[in-house]
Image (cartoon, rainbow, N blue to C red; front, side, top):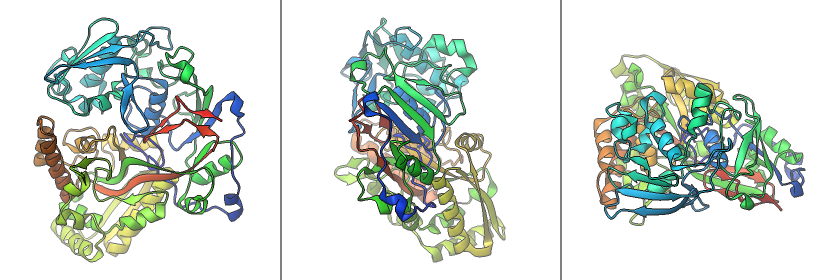
Length: 547
């Protein structure tokens, strides 16, 4: 999922978590130790996020903040535990046929929507059919690939009602697959697979999910106070949640804070229970109580609009990549970030004891994704000659939080340092919603994006860059890449599947369909009284409490 470089998510989709690099703190400010003044006996948590909610509609969400909200106010068949393993949520039992192509799920009988209606198997059928329906225009419809007829429905060749999902009664759900999905249960924990209340969707129409009042909830918390664009809202304990006895927090107050310096001041003043840190603050505070590093399976990267003649040039994209010192960028950002040389996040998937990203790299890709100023200059000069250009000028789109701005400024400086007067880069930083709108419409030249794995498998990254995928904002296209991704979904051998995905990653990096920058990580301060919080790339508050 998409994430901004300063927000946390699995994820995510969107994509999360850089600490702003440009803000410095005074020594006096760094020595104090902030704790929220929200009385622990009242169990009220004060939390920050670095980006606005875009939507609360599971069929239309793409960003980290929205998904995190959904994971705490809604619930599907499964949810992820602290080790990123799927555990039963609304599902109480799962049975799989011998050929692995039919799954049957028994559902809890005490699931309830906030409008008073029961959660039933039909809610899953309605939700999934709505998401794959081309009329919904869900950017996540592709993720249903593997469920019977999903690909044909998304392509407009079959009716949504033909999707391989069926209610066998109020509390029994059957799912038929085209082929085995080794990560199926992990998929089912992702909000796109959550149920949807048909009554609410039809009642609110186009306004469904655009505010707290036009959304219904079935999770541990109910969201209140989000009007669609405001920067503060809250989640309150859901008195109708089936597992309400496990929920200790009465309320979580959220505020959007894009500046790490302001967030840290609020933390120091006891107005926040957590704060993301800038690089300098992270360095100075790493021995303080409450200092934590959050790592996730996310990659921040550049996308080029390949519909534009200048960015159709593979040489040009390769030259840009080799002009960037990723280690220097990671050091500037601080807080656990590392340079990224693959689109798929490192240390996420092992293949016979070897990291998947190592399997995907060779001498060529390592060269292209490493800092080679002289070779970058040579390749850039050749690219300009091929394009019959004397100078490359473009605008780089980023989000408007401190970290995203810092990344944009680094790229601008690095390219102008490497290529001198032959390049001119303008950085345009916009609010999240505006940035995503430009990316989705193709109204950009180059942009800084982030992606968090929706589940711990390389396909969660690589699927995004197929030619027709909605998240492929730059419209990069490679037939061999598409064929490898498609074949990886049909083979039965896990080893063969990983080999196919590794070849696809290699092609993506050789061609620089996207240019990886850094792998996500961030430094935070967290109130030491906060216990039971689950973080696995996203924050889960169901078992959290203030001691």
